[in-house]
Length: 207
Image (tube, rainbow, N blue to C red; front, side, top):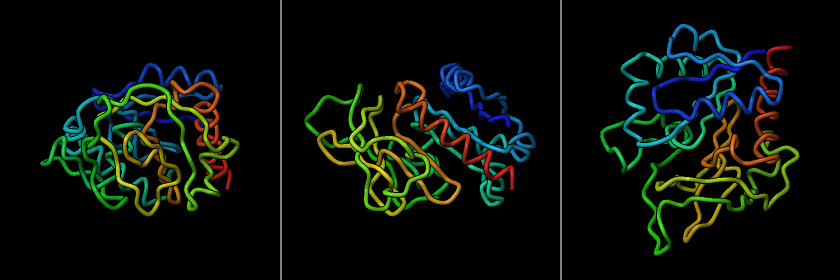
């Protein structure tokens, strides 16, 4: 099975490709809506300003992603890619997210240094006790973050992290998955999550 990486000219594509290659999975990188619709597994790596996701709407990729999700295709958003699954972000108020999860992302309101950069723990929520993405990942594991905006803790949040305040670190609902941190830079824990995502997609394709 090939993992389709969505290119919107702002994602951390090279590192994500290398991580999947390490796991023995093939990837294809595209900004073609038709190729997105045909995907068996979709990943949106995100880096930078939330406004860059506007390109997904103007290119037709947003509509293709929504169609793929509706058809049950597993979709993983990373960092800004996860934030895009919420209604939007105060970083770019005029840019709409997918609104797959309630609420919007906001800048950290803390006296700690922002951006939040480095290793931090993730803690499962009660809802995330049976998370498929976190299968085999110990509660309290460290992962690597780099971000200034954070998503609220709402229904569908499978794990949280604290940095002056508690925020969504992992979201999961049905075939929709997201990580605020970068699994491709999070060592064995991150690789396990990416492997889990691939296995979820492979199980679906085999049915």
